Image (cartoon, rainbow, N blue to C red; front, side, top):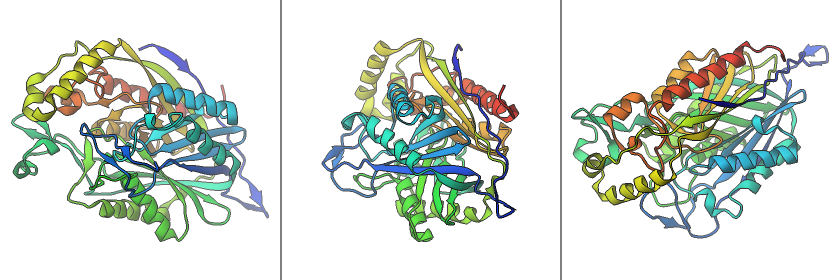
Length: 438
């Protein structure tokens, strides 16, 4: 795999700020910005092969941004309420932000919530370039002394692995007949871990809470415009803190994980929000601020000898057979040997890092990255700085199923999961070892 860019390696270790002779924890500068992108008209919801249109609003859609500053170095994290955001658009948006804010493009991560209840980027006038840039500019204008801490918790039972093993093959649970939905074992796990990064201003109020959880944002029951469960988490935390705080959701490795439909949308948001609120009490605030970024632009191989598995599609999702036949033919025409693929690693302390990739990564791969990471707390943020479809495990390809069918949503190499894990861990290890500018 050819490496095009091995770009930003930077670290700023600041002396502890002293105020009145006492050590201060407010040794970062951070700012928050948000822009409302909720449609004001009837729109086509993304995330379903069947057309669904609505004007009704459940929770509003936003672009939220946090900028973190240590010394002269800045990092921007953008949380975007949409299904996905193309790689080419992410590149363009990051370059424009660099021009207006002087934050290096490599220091900007744009992460999609993957809500299935909003319009695609193509609905918006300039494909969301302007609102993304505006949110970051607002965050830069809001920069002020803050303290930052990290922790992690668990939200058990709200999510589940959506691939069931039936007669030695993987079936997505929504394709099983109702009596069968709980009859077969899951192919793999669902990751209950909730990664949390909290930012508090000198007034003692939280400015932002960044959290990472591995589950599809597809729990809204009605045909409505909605940020899905991240919108309900925002509502729960705001109500329980008694003031508004920006909650930025970074989707974890959720390619094969869906909401547990036994839990209502409100209960899902409440349980996740409650866990975040409880864990805020165990936050470990960072004394020695660190800001280290490594961004790599790679070439990811495409699918080897793609075939249309008509028999598998016809048995498991017959109503969509023609849809997937067409998707196969169209993707076969557009297929390339390699695809631009962006990894970004951000280290904020000796114990905390974020590693990103632009795919719907299977849960097992994300869990493996976190387990092998040299950092105490690691967020694996997917659907970030691009959209390159599903990346199942090698085993999942053998068991077949929806996520493996070649087409618009699944076209990378069967080795992509192994490549992503190896590259992610290499970046994390490099970030861990770097304690000074070379």
